Image (cartoon, rainbow, N blue to C red; front, top):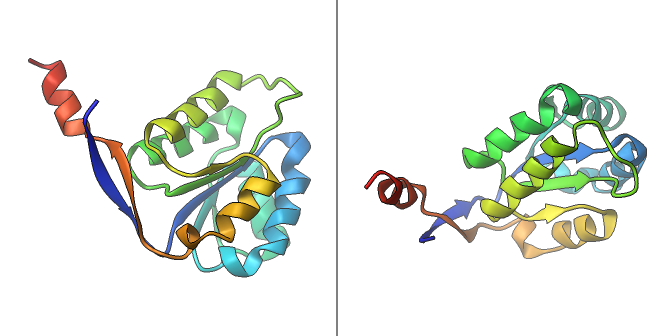
Length: 152
């Protein structure tokens, strides 16, 4: 597949997602990193986003709850180039009924080459990176070329 580039601006669009057993972990991480997160535009799945907004005072746009379609809403934003970083504390030890949606979300983040943190250590590395506060170019699929090749 041919690639093109996309500019991630200094002010990032960050999606915050956590499975039930890890909501407290993400909430605590957000509290610790509140000053870093406050400089960016935040969204999250329904329960997680609302919890973070209520407990930290951060401005988080809450989508639907994950099992009700929130994972898919965030995935759509990734595909549209409207999410720059995904912080997704997912629980590999507990199955969730919407597991296909979870896999699709992680797949889209990989396809569109956005940074993904699935645990506090990786999330810490992201916020401490120059990537978090500076503009950066990333390679992404050249969708127009992909589409042109498919309709030939």
